Image (cartoon, rainbow, N blue to C red; front, side):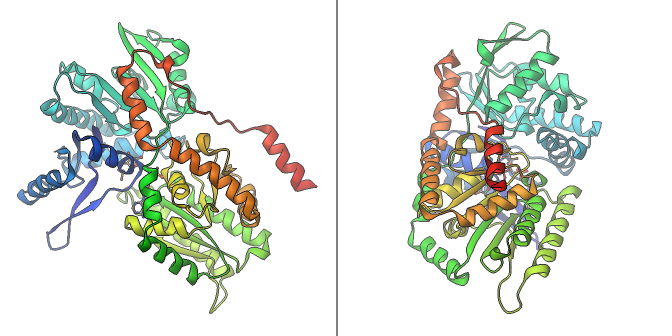
Length: 492
Ligand code: ADP
Ligand code: F6P
């Protein structure tokens, strides 16, 4: 397994000590249970720039406890700046989320990205044997197959993209579009989260690589004598573990305590890494619109917004934090009743897993409104933890999870602030039977397509010769009928 990060982040305290905390983000949550159960080698960066003896000792200790081997890739400060903050998170991240105006196409970033992919390849080569399966994850390592093949590795290489793949018109803006796309085709299997991403990728291959032939209804690409299989494998969560934790006495007590602090109120929960793709300012604006448009909600709903610090060396992330805090202040200033109701409770820190699960369990409504998201595991975790069966999920159409959760969630276009406000009101008013019907469907979908099924599906596809044997996942496209039905009700 190769990913940019190992599942924990080492950092220095002010007095030079070393601390380790779990990584946040969907990739780590998804891969941890898999490596723990299957064993293997996890190649990745431990999140710290120095390589002193105590770092070595911490890594060795972590390997002993983990049940799998850790193979660190040590990056210096310049590499972190150019490869991680630079090309990965100031070029690929915004571009692949359709936010090209936020990209900084600095050529120095591109050079660093190539060098660091080369460095990851060296660590993989130190560990991989010809009969191993090497599974590479996410946008930070798009050049890895090309590097490994150049070095002569013959082992089968799989790749899974955790984030979206953009449509052609957006991908075209990338100055290094041909090299990157061609390098991806050195993998043997490429997996996407949704059919949307697979379609976008194939559209780029058809348009930009005339030597490539797309065959078998988009499941196979042949180029320069090499065959690449392409599929959609929506990632899941360890639903059983979340459900068990949500049913534990500690979590039940914490969730009850939280609800007791907010009696007679609908608790609406938002949980996100600090990231502009998560749509937090528009969500807060929609919440404000709901309070203005439906005054009966005032005093009856509380929004608990948890924001996990992330990538805070990048200016746009710092600006986003300021914008969120300003909006929270404005909305609380407009509606707070002295000595009583405060509409938004804002938490800016990483939570322990049990605290997070207690929030999920206590919440009546989850508000998950990314502008675009590969999958969004928070939506699935909320469903798994809604063990009372009466939670309501409001979900962005542009989260990959919309395809699987479309039959139970209230879907919204996060750019449509009025419609999101209406969905908040609708969620608060849903009759109990309707809530249960929807949440039952959601919980079934999350359980059926969990992370273990995802791994098995991907690994079977890696071994199978023909992806035709694999069922296509469900697709999601917004429908005019649903929109019309909405307006009919609104106008009636
Ligand atoms: P992304 O990968 O873009 O961050 P996801 O919603 O797919 O978005 O994944 C977020 C993951 O981070 C979830 O698995 C969630 O459990 C985890 N997470 C969310 N909030 C916290 C928090 N406060 N502390 C630690 N982990 C968190
Ligand atoms: O799931 C998307 C993702 O970018 C992962 O690749 C990444 O590990 C996670 O979000 C969190 O971001 P970061 O590793 O930059 O802190």
